[in-house]
Image (tube, rainbow, N blue to C red; front, side, top):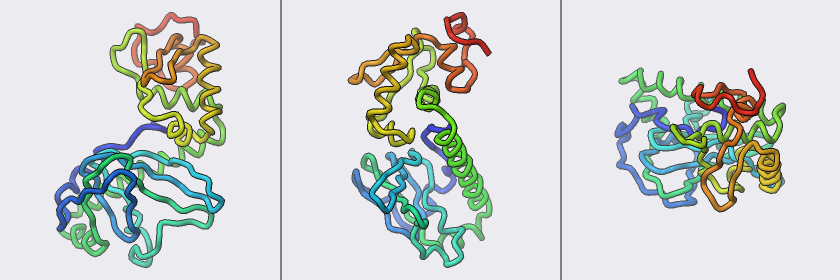
Length: 235
């Protein structure tokens, strides 16, 4: 879950806005003080440090609300989404259709439909859990473990040999995993040299050669017994 894209977290908010969905083109950003619902497309949340460093926090797919933090601010959402050390920015990674909600509209809808606010609380708790998992991963786990965890969320069901989608450019994947793209490439090359996996930098798939060792390194259970019996470590 740590590096999975969030999708369909808030479908009950679709068409609840008083405004029609608006097109935000690729690379568009969003003003503070509003909550938004992603009707279609894909976004990423990036943390920006004062020194110019960047860290991708997560990706959002259709059916998700974002910037719902305005509900939890004491000044009714007028403060920017910012901390002492970093600012945060939602950005379209492709053309998106988005619905916009003013804070007062969110409160009005919440009074009429309490289940909408419950849904926001539930999805927000998922994001808090996701952030906590990322902190642990970035603090304690090796580069290889992070790579395996990422690929484990993108296993192609029924593939033989076992394959995983590499659906992000190396620099974006590196940012999400909290490492430089050269470090990521070295980790992939090292895993390839050891016989754990194989990949082509121009391909969008990674072939898992030792599934048992791979899932052990990712700290997840192998999804299918047919992949057992490899040369990797046991559980």
